[in-house]
Length: 249
Image 1 (cartoon, rainbow, N blue to C red):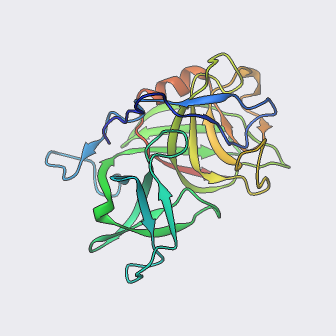
Image 2 (cartoon, rainbow, N blue to C red; image 1 turned 60 degrees about the horizontal axis):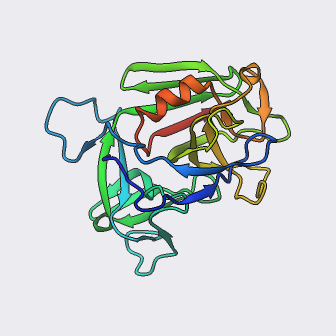
């Protein structure tokens, strides 16, 4: 996926995540969250199809979402860019002619819908993120190569991190890199199962840094995944948007 640029004044938003107990800072959409993907079609040696993920990025100011490829009216319309200023992206599950079934960044978790291929641009990459809640571990892979593996902080018993398959939908940059969210925060397509909202936001689950490394390896958050500042910085400079995030028990 090519780099995205938020023009003029970057959209300032409050990260609506179910994260720590600290007040939510105002965050800025990061202007280069994607720099290592390949536009379709690929023409050189590439990972096996099973390893590749296809990402659909909105080509216009909005994308209609339909219940099926035979539907004539969209059930919802999603705006591009997102409120954060990041481009609207989807993780593609399957294709059917001129239609794509995609995971949606909406409640309930795991929601999917159909979008018209003409309304998006497709790219592919071979990055994946695995979150193991019981082991308190994140593993980030590029194809068969592990590029980062480290301890994480996850949700508590009362505010657990929800399991399932999600994707990175936006990369945000807190104004204070030494604050509770660290230097970067990824917003995921998933939401807290127990918090319908959090501090005025929608309870979106995120992956971000921390100003308390001692919390890593423990159940400490309202549902977000905390990792080292060095680790999240590395990911922010490598990963595109639309990376699958599998969260296991």
